Length: 311
Image (cartoon, rainbow, N blue to C red):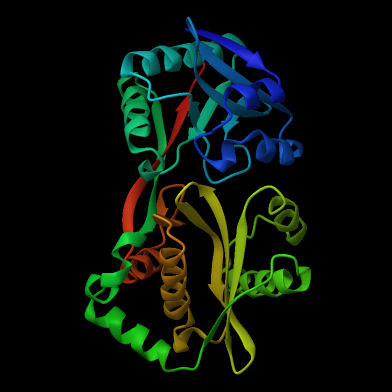
């Protein structure tokens, strides 16, 4: 298997349907300033088989370099043999360039067959698992049976939330001041918990020019008490990029209300999955977040990060 380095236009033409939006040329170009150089690689024998976009920072090549996950793009459902040949070529590429390669893959539900074959091959080739994240998602097809999915305590919290008088509002993407309202609720939430907020408001506004996005606010007595920022990542799958409640309102359970209304909204839109994201940081679980996501009916899956060392 040969590796060819491509220009952005060549990569876009060859992998016109990337595995997810974070692998798209438009998204990686938007974030190009966050690495020293972008390497767009194609793996081919008699024809192109797979591709990957890597962002270089010093002696490490990252996929992704500014996103929750990256990984390979595929032109079709490749055999395990071809995937193994491509991975061996990538390992040799790292050795030849004397660079470590770090890859974070999406959860399996983004492409269960190809991701399973790719991850199994990496493990079989003795690639180092740097860590695994516990990622949560909600299967939207189950929404009509939501009350039977959650336990008694979660039903009680949702019922209490429904009595508070919350108002669920999808805001206008063209209205920057409304987007800023949602952003400020999320910012206040993350600051109150000591969590990082990696996207600035300007980052959000630039990103939604190329990624389909929606923003939601929950109000109580005309006060913004919770918000969510959602990106459409792949056909049938949307992802919660950020969500949270305003400090001081947690006892009213606005997040139980917000999560329920989001599930309802995307079920009615005909989507397949709402990806809620990980509740771990470099593999270390946040037990409270894990419990909350499980209590609102989410399923846990693994998200792998591998490190290929140039030795």
